[in-house]
Amino acid sequence: MLPDFRVRQRDYLLEIARALTQELDLDKLLTRILRISIEMLAGQAGLSPSKKPAAGGWWRCMASQLPF
Image 1 (tube, one colour):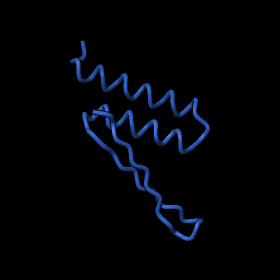
Image 2: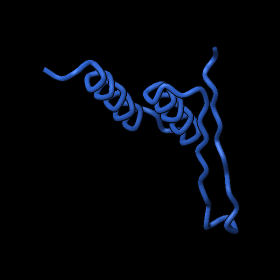
Image 3: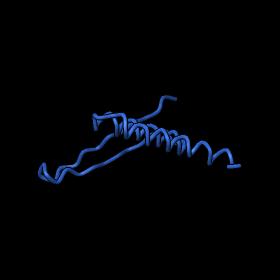
Image 4: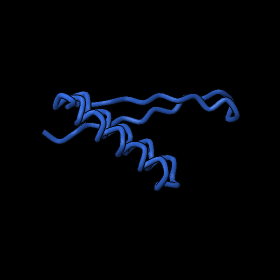
């Protein structure tokens, strides 16, 4: 039997996998993955920077914070 942490981690990763197959809007998908990751790692906030090389190399950041 897997320890409780491993079971929860598996459930979070399955939720991320489902989101990848269900969500077509990239912004919504990244926000959802960021929120799941924050919860999985017991964090309070998260940041996801990404670079768009085709758009002149500008950076885009997504931030999320779980309510306290």
